[in-house]
Image (cartoon, rainbow, N blue to C red; front, side, top):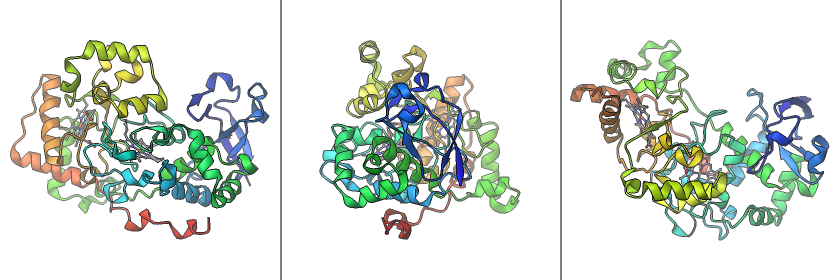
Length: 389
Ligand code: HEC
Ligand code: HEC
């Protein structure tokens, strides 16, 4: 069997789109050859690099049991941190819709970060990743936590790759999936496996999806009243767009949350950020260790003054499971988050939204209808199909 794959144009954190003549083109490979020798495609880069390809045909994505199983194993393996203390699942827990229930995450060496952990169930192809959208490719974004000093705490990718290579079980699993012999374990293949696992996570329909699909009684009359407010008078749907069931517009907006932290030093902070001009994993690591810098939001990526304090509109799917709220986790409950949004969004447009206590409750009931059944607790354990790895 042969798959058609699209060349995406990056290796690890390095964007190579300009140098890859095949970028955006479709290329045929045998199933299993998810990573190929880059030199075979782009002679100018040399034969030693490998490039992992994401399978773009969504009917095939996630169906590759072996790569998903390998990604799952990596996701649960604390050996990905230098002292074996932190795994991806330490902060992305199934019971919290793959977030962690903390205000800000706590990672390697008990270091607290500066941002609230987002759910991994709301990632869709092509959308901006992280609260400031500093990444757009999932197979690259999944590598950043490995070298983030407040997350997994590795000094570089090389040390992670060396630890994986030292284990026979990984040597066998990677070469089985990526067919590159002893070059099969690379940052690109680790990224491809972790991304495949995240894409494969089951996302059962919620009550709202069933309602949209024609099952009118899936939403109670109160939730329907909430939906009407959400799309109507309360103005929430302007940014949390319900049309595609994702409840985000993939854009960045000011939130009125957390900027007080940076308010008195905006000049120094913005100039400092522009001078350092960090991107990708280096930016992620710097943000994790500096709350004032983290509060600059989208500005860190675009360096546009209007983006200071702007953050990605979060999807509201499973929002009842992902407390606390906002990029800095500063709002503890869903009801307080809704109150803050009603107030701030009205303030920002100059048209205050007046809702009765009953109407606020309707909105809350509607937001709770966006919860899918919680992931099975078993998801924190090795699945049966991964046991053979
Ligand atoms: C110490 C806690 C912690 C660990 C460990 C951790 N993450 Fe995260 N993750 C976070 C936080 C916090 C963010 C948001 C960071 C930001 O936006 O600046 C995040 C964001 C993400 C995102 C982007 C989600 C989105 O919607 O934008 C992905 C993907 C992700 N993590 C995958 C992983 C993977 C894969 C691992 C393991 C290799 C991992 N994470 C380990 C805390 C953690
Ligand atoms: C102008 C765009 C916009 C509008 C209108 C808007 N939101 Fe938001 N919403 C955002 C952004 C951006 C954030 C993230 C802010 C942050 O983290 O600082 C957010 C965050 C939230 C959160 C927290 C989610 C989480 O995972 O942390 C909830 C809940 C929420 N909004 C509900 C609402 C409701 C209810 C309305 C209508 C009353 C509404 N929003 C109107 C853009 C908007």
